[in-house]
Image (cartoon, rainbow, N blue to C red; front, side):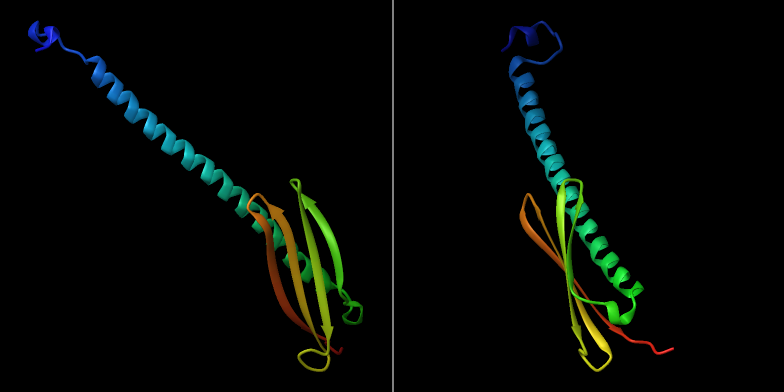
Length: 128
């Protein structure tokens, strides 16, 4: 038996302290990994949300133009160090006469690689 236990003293032994410290280290490591993963996901969500906003803004910009002026175009935008390429393709008389099929594709790079988001719409001429 341990001399401390014989004397009736309370407390923890060195072995118990090391075991508790080991458990704490494992738990702290798991929480640290969780935080790093959360930060990566947050950044990925932010860049995707920005890309979706650029795609929607592109369609709104085209909608504000005169119908005859709507044409294919490519632009780049930069937010937070990320470069977004906005490529818009316009097909006239598709799917029918006096309609334009619009395909907007946003490309950008993030730490996980190249990313793409596409948004499609069909505009028609309104005679007034």
